[in-house]
Image (cartoon, rainbow, N blue to C red; front, top):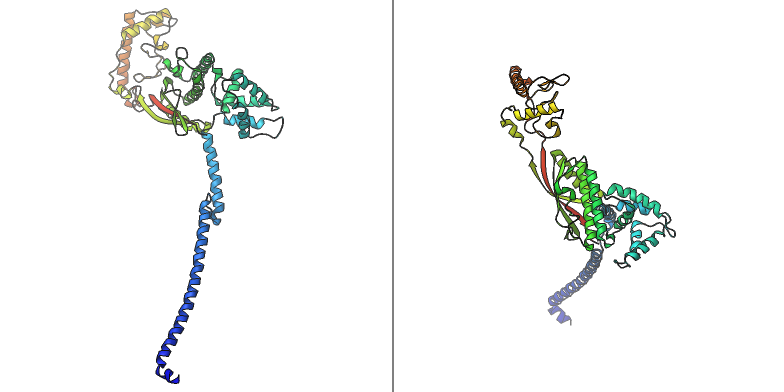
Length: 445
């Protein structure tokens, strides 16, 4: 044995070192494997946690939970404001109505709870059974102690919001429309025609002295007598008049001079996603500032839960102010002078004061071609109304005075001459505007 060891000492040393190295490597591998297994388990655990966070809506990180909640609250408030833009114009009146109601039994209701309770019974009745709907409506009112008092408050607010002439027999229909019930008018066309006539009369009275309604514009695109209407069209027509009334209200507030044309595309409206769009086109005349104000009033309709989109405005000048620069000096209109002379003889008011004919210079009047402040008595008349001149003498005297005024004007300094400093081009002029408007109603659930 000793002999074997002596002969193979080197081999034994090599094998011993190799064995020790193998053992060391095995231990090191085992430790590394254990470490890798630990990391692998941690990775799997983190993946599961990440997936759990992703599956949550929204996926929160603990440090961001407060910020996320703040964003949620902000979006809720913005959504509430946006909903109001597309809500019914009488929503605020309905909210105050419900807030004033006192139930016979139970606690006070919110607007949503009130609507839900009403529609539970109303929607269960056949829409054609008007009598049963009326019975349910009366029974529903009896569930509240002060329905009549709350309705007085609702009516007061409604009159300030809508332009429809509100009467006792229409009040219930208007109130039900704020709850989402279509205006059917019991399916009677006679009631529809009466509704349209009353509404038109209200709008005509509202514009009197403010906006001139010309031609067929005063009928607001509805032929109330000849056009045939069906019971199915009644809710759509009622909705149309509500919008038209609001447009006319904004017209009167804008200061435009006249409404010359008014048309709608259809009573149906056009569906676009979750929205229903009504198209209107109307023509007005007035100062540029009034037309700008009208566009602004339409644009701000969202503040009253009415959403308008002004698609286009085409502007046209009613007259070219530059033409005055190229007009020749006025010549004496003998026919107009003779007519005025005859009218003064007969004691009639001059034609110019009745809106027609040539306008003659009056005492204190300023025009582009005459200086103001000269109190010139009409030739042919003396104090007390005694006639002293014939027609021919009057014309000759007028021409003489006109020429004398022209010569005297030429002798004055240029800054004192007639017309000096008058605005000829660029002054505010009347315009004709054709305006296309979309009225948008949210039609979603």
